[in-house]
Amino acid sequence: MSTGPGLGWPDRANESPDDETSGLGWPGQGDEPEAGEQPPEEPSSESGESGEPEGPAGETPSGHAMWGNTTSGTAETVGYVPTNGGANQPSSPRKGPSQGESQLVREALKDANVSQETVAVIKASSGRREREWPRPDHCRIITIANQKGGVGKTTSSVNLAASLAMHGAQVLVVDLDPQGNASTALGVEHHAEIPSIYDVLIEDTALADIVVPAADIPNLFCAPATLNLAGAEIELVSKVARESRLRRALESYDTEKFDYVLIDCPPSLGLLTVNALVGGDELLIPIQCEYYALEGLGQLIRTVDLVKSHLNPQLAVSTILLTMYDARTRLAAQVADDVRNHFGEVVLNTVIPRSVRVSEAPSYGQSVMTYDPGSSGALAYSEAASEIAHRGAAQ
Image 1 (cartoon, rainbow, N blue to C red):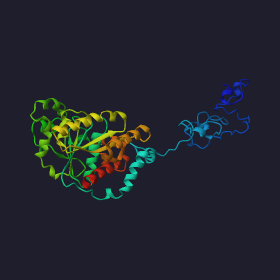
Image 2 (image 1 turned 30 degrees about the vertical axis):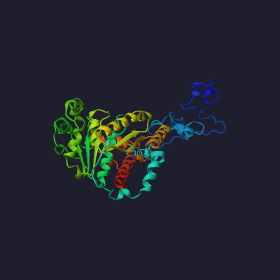
Image 3 (image 1 turned 135 degrees about the horizontal axis):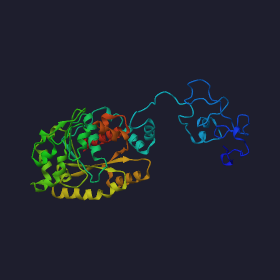
Image 4 (image 1 turned 90 degrees about the vertical axis):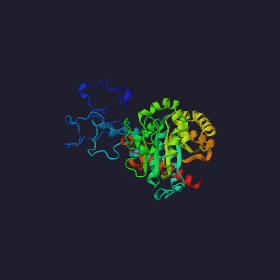
């Protein structure tokens, strides 16, 4: 084999094949390296030190092992990492989290702008999570709605509810989404035979007959949704007072034993969402920090104004929560600034960063508050819930 000038060595076209070595560019053992270059270290002769069998005596080993010891190659300049076939590899098992965010991700989140903003709020309110948060003097019924899908409605409903319940509040989550994701995240069964919110809306079943406690978290309850709810939009058309059936069910239920009722809506502006808007006193809008999330916001606000004018004068946009904030992009910061400039103080100071743990938690039938309380997502949702609780008490 001949190495040409392109690899940094003099042309060896005149050498015989017997003089060649199996290295990656070093001349034979009898030759001297050029000035300024270091020859490779001799491979260890001890058994068990290398994963590759030793070659003939005096021959430089081939593969990547040599590159880690050179100063003329790219190993040290660009951080080349030898493969298993080359340099010795540690035999100890890999340490760190086995799933979800690695330690590197956590360190990156510490340096991210979103985390700095959230940490600043947490420091300013140090100790709030250590004691019970103030409880409202009456039940706060909060509808969580945004017709755009994937903005974090269900995730926010579940984690805000869990955080409030973990700090002494009595909380009911009404799952009004036919997908039933909130029910899944709270560990509540919601197959077709389970009494659900569908029976309340269509069959006039009492809300008390379907409410069940959530797993693992005291003070937290759920009115589950099943796939039957997917047909409720059509079935409600022929019902009397179709827009206010959830409101009537809540009024006939003893909601005063709860501090909060959170209504999780489907990603639409159909009759299910209208029922939630009529049934609630406050509206919480999760907004993903991307342009598309802003595009449909005007339509949602117009729908809210119509509901206020004709069906529920008490409805007010009380809270806007910025979710899925990615500090690596300027767009996220621009969207956050635009929302704050337009809506003012109703926007929570806390923003929710993208977090692998938040996405993982539902697969274990948990909220992120119990799945990984120390993750960036759990801390952010806890602080957001604290803001909601303290703002309500101040009003």
